[in-house]
Length: 379
View (cartoon, rainbow, N blue to C red):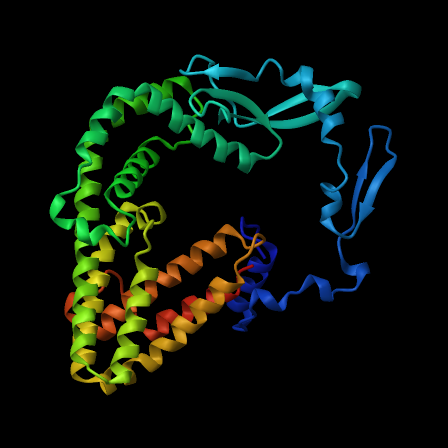
């Protein structure tokens, strides 16, 4: 089994599937069922080699640690790296990590990164983090804030250009109103252009020069895209409500239309701009149109829709189960795969209920089955 960046469970499941054709979901590899002698033993020792803590649970690596004593040891070593009250890039280049030697010739690995000041929310601090992922996450937010300061005049102009047309005010109720949409649009633009893990001063100013002419342009592009989605959502909901009224006392049609509206609310939540990439938002309009076409055809021939829906339910049911299983220990790899599976189902709906709209990717039951097996093998 070759070395990879995926979790051991995911790699093991993938290896067995490729080598022997046996599909074993990650849930089958339950560590709690292993006898203790087969579990890894963790041990923490001090500078003199004396064991401080040990156990079969990796929680011993963090539980009981004294952050106070560590802070005291690291205080003087990190002082030359940490700064406060920053409003511009005047602190030189930042490495991804720094190996600090402290008392007793012990090495501590720390990860420098920017941090938005918690009190002011405006200035920045340069901090040394114990965790690389936290450092990168914080640093990207810090770089975002630094660019926002750098482009303060441009961003004022951007806000003025994010005006929504008054004729769609009724369509915006589901999305929290025009002011909330404008705020989220603004956040989408700056997150897309500014949230970068930039470490070099020259790279910062080079990126600033590159994105300067794109700020207002990208805002207008996103605004147009969001307006189309908001209008398409309103049009689809209005059409579904119209079919429900015409259905009279037909409970099957009424229940179907209610379920379809629930599906649309999940597809286009009020914060969809923050959840989806701009590329993905571009496809949502097509999914909404597909739902409108499905509603119209189901109103005319409900039984035909039910026949088509039976195969779809297998995949939507498995998606609900996958979403319910996601927790803090779920890997990024699996989260991404579940999201891909979600969008594959949306494309499958287009192929089944509104073929004339065409799909963005090749899609079939076989492809969905293969993707589902792949996701289940992941930890």
